[in-house]
Each structure stands twice: as C-alpha cells, then as structure tokens.
Length: 311
Image (cartoon, rainbow, N blue to C red; front, side):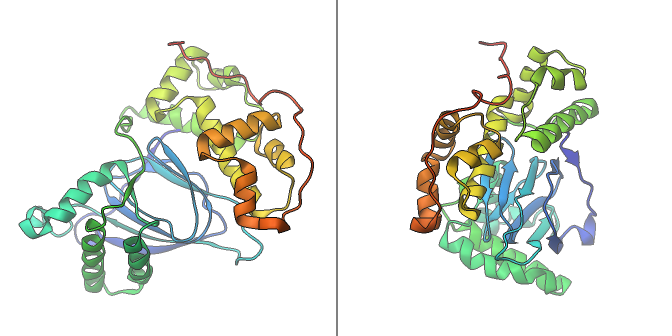
C-alpha cells in the first residue's frame, strides 16, 4: 500500500476536531505531519499503526505522532448497534500554539509524551484514558478557543498516565519515493481485500511488476512483517469478530476467515492472541454459544507462503 500523504491546513486551522460517522471505516493506509488523537465511539475492527495490528472497539483511544502510517478497518455492523461507525478525531501540529510552547518547562511532560507518540500510544485500557474519552467526545462541539483549552487539558491528563501502550516499533519509516508508496499501497490494499481468500503471492508480484523474492523483501522492509504474517493477522482479527458476534461454529469461522483447516487456524490464533478461539468464545458468549464438533480438515492453509530471501 502507499501510505497516502494527507495535507491538512496550517496556521489558525492547524487544530482540527471532528466527528467521523460512516457505514464502515474502510481500509485507508495514510500518514500526515499532524499529531492525531482518535477516539472510537461506536465501531469495531482492526487498527493498523506502523507495524502493529490490534483489534479495536468502542472506547479505543490512541495518540499518533507525525508521519506514522495508520488505518482503521471496521468489521460488519453489529445487529444490536445502530448502523453507523462513529469516531472523534483531533489533529494538530506541534507548533499550533507557536514553536516554543511545548518547549516550556511546564509542558515538559507533554513534550515527552509527544515524542513517545512517534510509535503510537494507546490509552483505552487505563483509567486516565476512560476519563479523557468523555472530554474527547465533546471537543467537536466546542468553540475554537474552547477546543484549544480542551485539547491541552486532555494532553496534560494523558501525559500523566504511565500505562500507555506502544503500538508500533521504530523499525518502520514512511516511504518517501512516490513509486514505493504507490507499490506498497497496491500490495496492502490487495491483501486487505482478499485476506479471506487463497492468495497467490507470485501473481501479486506480477501485478506490481516485481519478482516474488523482491516483493517479500520490499513488503517486510515497508511494514516490518512478512506478507504471510500480515495476512494471518488479518484473518485472526476477522475470526475474533465472528467469534464474539455470531454463533457460527469455530470450524466454520476458521474457514470463513481464510484458514484452510482447524489446526492451522487454532495455531495461528494462539500465536497472535495468546489464547485459543474457544477461550475467546467462552469469555464473550458463555454457555449460550452454539457448539459443534470440530475436526481438522480441508487444505493446509490458503495461499503459498512467501519465502524470505534470508531463509
């Protein structure tokens, strides 16, 4: 995927606060020079930040640094919720109050947090994050002056939270060459659209005018992971949503998410989540979930593994 560069306004308009309401949050890999605070009000799916992939749901609150590639990709609308996915987004430049403001001694905790945000920070699991979420939800309705005061209050609160989770490693850097950006956009868009199908990596390589070994090296350099790992993370995330939202059998879910048999699905799920799909279902649906006898079967995994040149 190309991480699309987004140009936002500067100067007096460099602080933007808005509500996002869509029937879905489609995959859109992009970056911009502004910091971004995003609060998920009503949505669920997968959050991609740098080389980190994680599930998200209502209350998800993250702070992203400048030029950090990211995207939210929503799952299907839950029948028990309304038809829209909702989020609140605040974007701002470090100098939106002047170049020297965050260099003030009083702002040092905030400045340190902003530096850490270069790798993305998640706060939804903390008491501070839950408290800030209430303030965050109201910001788009404020006057311009109140927005500034509200954002500063939020940043000060978050800077005092020691439990923020880092979302990405520092291995990933935005690709500066336009042709590289366009190529990685095409690759990741294809994988996001077809992760639940059989993927022919050799055919994908031809689509982006590369040989397969070069494609594998290029993708790992751009995203910090192999294409096989990336696709498995997409599939496990989709499976987790089906486990909590439906009463489909675990075997059915494994196939629907793109895995060729139960053993591979179970192995990848445990590797990525740290626990098996049965445990997740018990946690969310308890004894009411429909149980079916599970058995291994089918083809061993969808797609030919992408063989790394270093192997």
